[in-house]
Length: 402
Ligand SMILES: Cc1cc2nc3c(=O)[nH]c(=O)nc-3n(C[C@H](O)[C@H](O)[C@H](O)COP(=O)(O)O)c2cc1C
Image (spheres, rainbow, N blue to C red):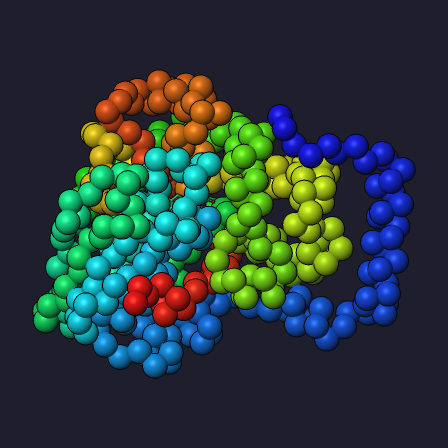
């Protein structure tokens, strides 16, 4: 692996730890400063207003056209690494075109742009659910000008959206505000067959086979997912991609309002503040520090093995249309889970298409019995959690094409 040398001797680490301790005492003056305290105590909000409801937040931001309001709810959708890969061209107060933002893609872990297109579907689903709340229905045409990947991504619209007067509220809107991806430990009992049945019924999948994992097999799947994460971290280009999107400290998290962070991985409060202030930095030496990486993987393992069930999203073919529609299914299931008091997280590593993952991905596909052209697009690991971290979103105005 072509990583920067990690040649720190034990002695050096100890002297650095001593330095950190000293600078901790200097910076804090022996007690927590006001800035540190506010960071330590901060609560996390998806939107700048601090309001949970995306439509209320949009109105707070001065938006009133139905299309702006619906899009503002749509951008609370799940998307890999929270890159928010969306651009919009507003046509009228009720119409817009949706594009991939080519500057917000993940070339190393998503070289085919599959996950980026799933995110377009996630957005369309949340937008459609929110449209009902506005007394509208979203009429969506996929690829109105034709579409080829990767050449048309960012150039041609993925979808045209037209809001039409209607009276069809979607009960899942009530779950939009609290929907979130939870990566901390899950508690409570295993997902039971009734819950699986309800989840699938509420999801009403458009394209995906929703295949639940038998309780007796869950451990074997988790072993695969853990190896997938190890492989992603061991492959320098994919690890670097995560470093690029990693935000350190609340100033960066709320300045950039995107990406991943300790907080999004469930490290919060004093521990987060301490690690971000004294240990972690964007310097590869710090970021890839062996003890830090080990701590991360230990926690990752603990959280991963606490999940209580899994559903795989499998499509019969693997076209760009499948990706978008499967994204809709995934986002809808996350709302459904939320409405049932459940949370979910995906572990996409084994579904990713980069070379270093190919062997492990092939082993997982053969374990599941999925053969091309069929494709496992994503998984939902399920459970219960009170963790309520909300990953921030950029303002809608930053996503508008002129
Ligand atoms: C296609 C897709 C793939 C994703 N893959 C992963 C993943 O491998 N691991 C993970 O922890 N989260 C994954 N996520 C979840 C995103 O990281 C999450 O949606 C994003 O950080 C925003 O957070 P939120 O869902 O809480 O709003 C994925 C989401 C999508 C739509």
